[in-house]
Image 1: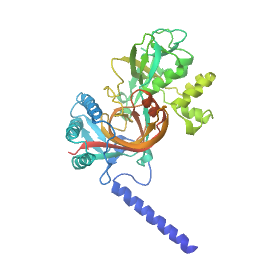
Image 2 (image 1 turned 120 degrees about the vertical axis):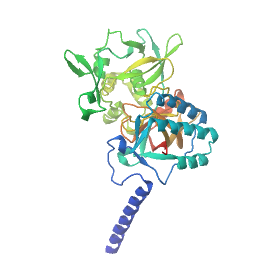
Image 3 (image 1 turned 45 degrees about the horizontal axis):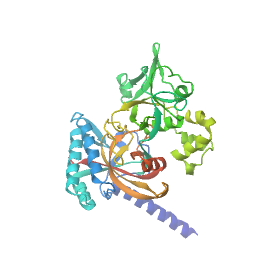
Image 4 (image 1 turned 90 degrees about the vertical axis):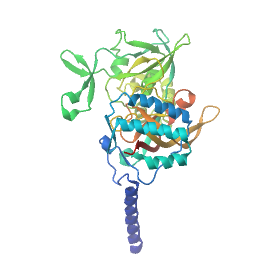
Length: 406
């Protein structure tokens, strides 16, 4: 017995030492997990074990996404600094990275050749992930289409609003250096600033009524919530025409998941949580709608768009190629590569199983719930598949970034 116990402890120590050595070889993560506090800690360089760089989508969509992305980069000063983990990278170098990558995929899409070229000419950085462990939780979002009206009536009576005139955004860094990068949203009330109205005050107490802020009216308050969560959408009007709306501002309150609240209250089992299941429950329990929706005090205001949905860098999102990340940790407009899982759907529109996939993406958006180095949100586009994928996706994967070597 003593020999067996000693042998077990010895094997455990060997395994621990090997794990530490492996983490050093990966150039990535210590065994002791820690919270990522700033962009310098959000990613680290990969030196040995590179991903496959296989891409499951059509190459034209990738070219389109990068071309749109370069529009953003060329609006910036060439000397503007992005943080790729500990690497300080100029905007000029980011442009050169994506232009070189465009040249590469115009010559070859063979994964082996692409991988060889990337290893030789690019630095590959990996997101530290959840608690610094390298694993990233991927969810999805999409561009929904909702029936709406430009006039209020008995069918369409739940408004979406433009940005109110009394909403102000205050840059705290202008007052104290230690608050640099921190902003708050509020409203001017006399000679002071107060927090802006919460969802309950707006939707239940109706504090914004009669201020001529309504863009359109929807059929269902749940539609309003989901449109706000997605950040953009198409509105189908009674005459058959459509308008596009997108994120303009928020009320500054923290985002809280109504799904988590419903699980805690026992309304829905954790295993079955999805947008579809939330909608089904609220449809059968209308007396709980105000209670449940008000658990998320965050509220989004919209603007009309001339084209499709725009991300936080003000370029159109590309379905399957645009990703939303924490803007405080990851560089906007970065060329990324992910590995995760996607759903397979049968002819009846139901998910049968999930399969691994990988592809190149662009960091072109952010979201209220996308916080930390271990969260990412894939923009799936619009349509039935996009809604299914976005509504059910909650899978772990890996996130990488590419930057041209100096």
